[in-house]
Image 1 (tube, rainbow, N blue to C red):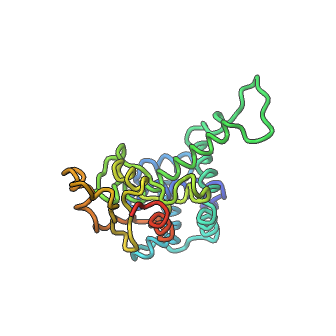
Image 2: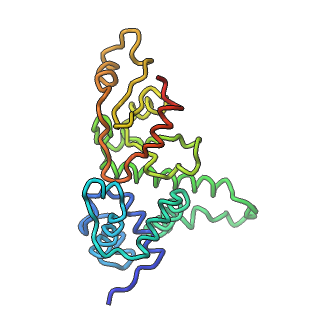
Image 3: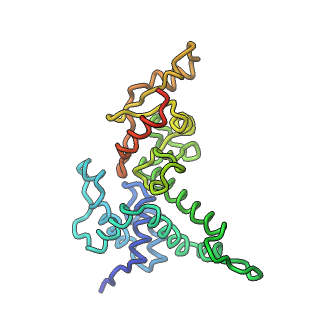
Length: 255
C-alpha cells in the first residue's frame, strides 16, 4: 500500500519542481530518478507529485496547461507556503535537498570543534543562507525559461543569469521569488540591471535614450535598437510579476 508523503518529502518535491523545466517532470528524468531513489520512492510517484504541484501554478493555468487531478490538501498547503514566503521556504527546501543528495548541509554549518558557537547567526550561517537563496532563485528562474534567454533565445547556461527585477538589495522579501526574475544572457542582464533597457506592460523591450545617441555602433544597433519593441519569451511558469516590472520602469530605467 502506498505510504503517505511526509511534510519533509513534500518540501523536497517542491524544490525539485522548481528546478526542473516543466517538460522534464516525467519519470525518466535522471535527476528525478536520483531523488526518487534517495526518498525510497518510485520515479513515477515523484513525477506524479510534481505534476500535482503544477495544478496550482497560475502561469500554467493561463497557458491552458493543467497538472494531474487529485492533488492533496497537503500539496496545496506546501504550494501556498512557498508563494507566501519564498525566502524562508526556498532556504529550507534547498537545505533539505542538499542533505538528501549529499549530506553537505549539516557539515558546512557545523562549527569547528575548537570554537564556541556564537549566540546569534554566524557569518557562516548568513553566507550559507544567502548561497541557498541564490541557488534556488537561479535554478527556478532558468528552469522556468527552459534555460533560454528571454530576449535573445541564447541557450548556453554559462551565459545566462537569473536577473532580479526588483534588485536583491531593494526588497529582501523578493530575493528568492522566481516571479521577480528574468532569464537573460550576460549582456541583457547588465543592461537591465543598469536601467538601459526595461519591458512595458505587454512585455516588449524599451531601450533607453542613452543607447540611442551619438550614432550607435553596429553591435549596439543590432542588439538593442533593432530589438526594441520585441516581446519577451515568457516562461512556462512563474511569469514575471507585472508590479515588479512597473517598479523597474519607474525607479531604475533611464528613460
